[in-house]
Length: 288
Length: 352
Image 1: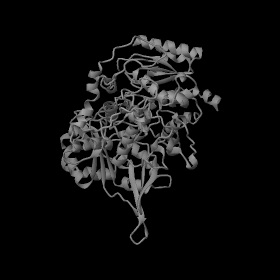
Image 2: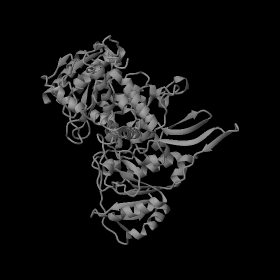
Image 3: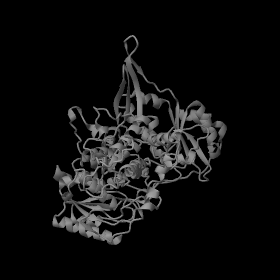
């Protein structure tokens, strides 16, 4: 990891020096032990602030949208960032030439509170970036997908195994605890609407009260809107200050789309291929 | 007076007969839940006590502050509409319950003083807040330990004493008891009602101080010259403009008033709002004076550390550390305070 950190620092400095990029997005140390925070540098002299260790929990993809306005952005990409970037390109939010991607193979990050593997990394299916301009470090081996899927869908299966009443109680507990800070929306690389339905106050889709109904409505619509585009970076659940299991809602979609339409994983390429936005003559039609 | 910890449940049960009593609770203590089992949040908060509730007075701080009891996230204000004879009516919704918050920390007690300034001073009393405030009694417990994110003593508070609370409980060094001191008339009445459970003795109490220190001196004066400083542009880059910091903050008190109508009737309510949201500052005709992240982030910290002190003579940050702990991108107000103290003011002049 130290070697990767040095490579990022060196390449960031060179890219800024040569003017190839106007800015590099990476990580730096936070105040506390084992804490990092996103870093934005514009000068080669600041490259020494860049840190890469096993506590780089933030997925940086979403930042590119705001920062590209000032010119080409260099950004560190692991599997999760790379898939987010691909998805943003597919969604026409970003052009490939607007970013310079410093690829980083990643063995998974740790939770600073427990020192254990970070939840979102336990279900990671792409430890190596799926798109990059250069790779800083040797590729690592992905966990066998059958092994990952046991973890990935374990909670979905547990929820599916509940009775109707138990399931209602489970989701009421989840939605009752939501404070609607919208961290899940802001951090999500596929939540890229310029104006979110939540903020369309005159249309009034989303009421402003905090109660079970409004919270349920927000969370379900969030999942519907992400729909077939989730890249499974897990940032929604990580960012949630209430620790709500938000990825489980997304995973239910992912699993259903897989089973019904063989949708596959999102963000592996920057080609637009929305499972729900295309029609194939051999699509499953059980209900017709 | 001395209160043994084993008598706490007796006191709470007694009080719960007269008032709504809120105590810090971690969900695990009650149902062994947590995410993955019951869907309940991993967070901790003040919850209504009833016999059987297991309060957790060892939590340094609850995830959610107790401000909800005074200033609910959604508060219904009045109902309106037309009655069967076609006459318009307005029914104001009153809260009439006595409330006790038991087990708050010094930071939370100070946050109520801040909210009192906002809602009950400068010539205007907010009647919805006032109603709840008059029926509220607070019992503070001195901190027996501090979290790494605690920095209240840098913001002029004392983790061992909350002068704004009605009753102060100070943990004894033996870990088995609290020294009880009533600090107001309400407090005296409460302590009088606990008499059967108190002992007429005293004990040596713990004294803690925060590990995290920042220099809070002169922040307001410096910030007054930093409105146009480049520090804000750089700082705001990492901000997601979610509302986490404002919603976990015990002193953030901004709200929006809205209503919902059904047929001939409707309800008007107010609910928490956040200066981090774009819609917060949006005006009629879609003009937004804070159109991007930078002015929103600047507003939040300026309000905490400069504007509020200007108006009410105290800082709006009580050093509880909740935002420091919960910010998804580790945008840390204590690091910002360091940066402000280190900032070169000549840069601000260049920009201006």
